Length: 266
Image 1 (cartoon, helix red, strand yellow):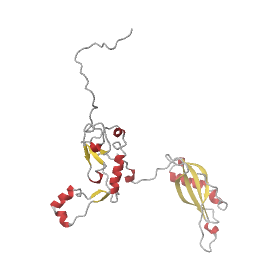
Image 2 (image 1 turned 135 degrees about the vertical axis):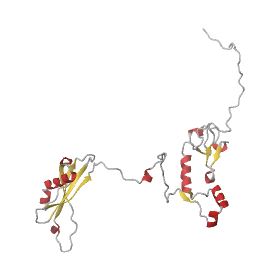
Image 3 (image 1 turned 90 degrees about the horizontal axis):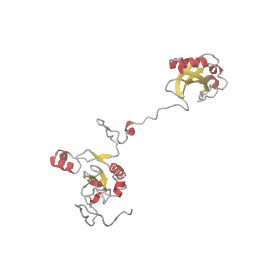
Image 4 (image 1 turned 30 degrees about the vertical axis):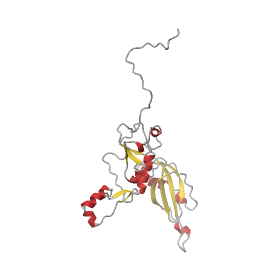
């Protein structure tokens, strides 16, 4: 930052560099933390009340000094001084440490739930879902009789209504999009070379509900997708219908034979 020179009419304040430096050193706690004088800037006084002349408001200027505070590269000390018209007495209004144009600043604060990324959760961590999480919606509202009826509760649990909240259409759509675009989606290199899609594989376990036609889980321990959510049109070499190419059986040789068809030319 390069402050502009204060206009005429504030000569007392402009010349009060030593007063401003002393105030900055007192605030810094160490004279060595206040560097060279960078300049002085006149502060706007605003609009005076009706019948009051602008000159009666006095003058206010801000002196700037380079900062030598460790860890505050590019910052500067700003000392604001004021004076009553017609008097030589200078008043220190405030002393602050401000960032300059090339100052190192901390990044903008981001709420914790926006800082989290997939994979950040570790053992013992708790990630509470917010009430307004768009991925979740209320499951169902039961009347008093149904809430205390064991048979009704059993049916509700069986069809997935035993939870207070379930995934919303937005939540299901987001999950499906991630899985289809992942390593076990239809465009994966493994799927392009597979003998058949997962939809026709005996080890394919379709998901329940609206995702059944798109996704399922792999139950083949020899597949790289075992225990993972896979697309119906994903595939791998461990397909249940995969067979070896049919061809003529190869004769098994059990004794030594001489090759009389080919010979070396010396």
